[in-house]
Image (cartoon, rainbow, N blue to C red; front, side):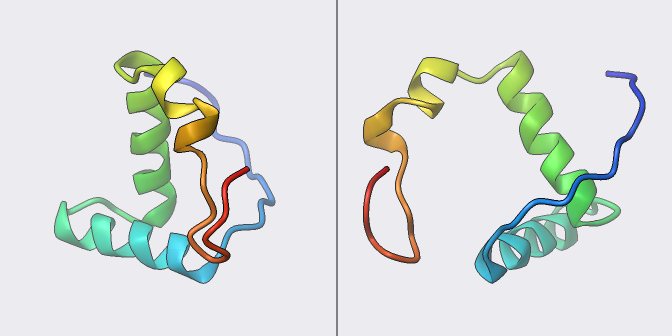
Length: 67
């Protein structure tokens, strides 16, 4: 999927970045930004968006709560 890369400023928790770094290392991906793009591209093309964004699947690991 071609497109222009745009820098964004998002707030994520440290364990999100650690996860992305770990996945990048495990799967030979350039960096955590590319790992995030891989996840987003998968959701865009093959993900079940109704399942991904269903309120019962949204949760906060840090606080243990749901959204």
